Image (cartoon, rainbow, N blue to C red; front, side):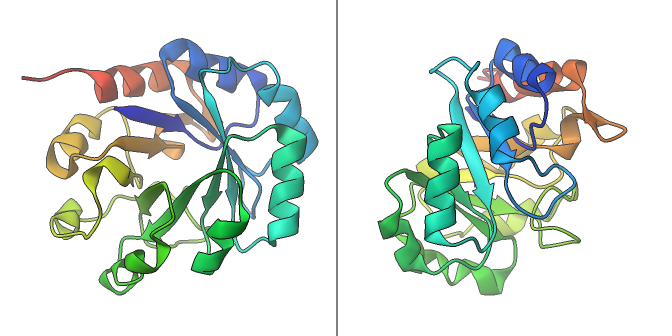
Length: 203
């Protein structure tokens, strides 16, 4: 089970995620309370082991800006979390995660993004695109036209519900931000608990 800890803004939070076994670390380069500058992200990213993939989260950004930031930070993966056109993926020489809001009308657009490496299904938009800490009805994903090996689940996940979410949805990976925070800051104990619960083997 892949685990992405998103909204990293400090070295301490990144270290906690890495030490607990995170597979991906997410930096938000978009309007968000977890926004980080490329320079700050690069300082954190440069200390990460190569085994942990660095993900840049973008919302309706230009290709040139995405490429420039990706190069500055040393990103491995680009997450498109806005209304980016499908052809943008062809212009990005990186793994690409395409975020899809958990609404049936958006599910119809999935087939347009066949070049995406992963699809991240997140809660419907709130104040920001993602990171709003709300769950949605996982039953809506039962007939989702996505190969489960390409499906990442986000939206209101936390240590207390992650096992249920994985059993019900059977995604390739999970993504968390606010669910491992206390008073708006990443919490080492919650990060550790979340990753342990996500990676536990049942059966």
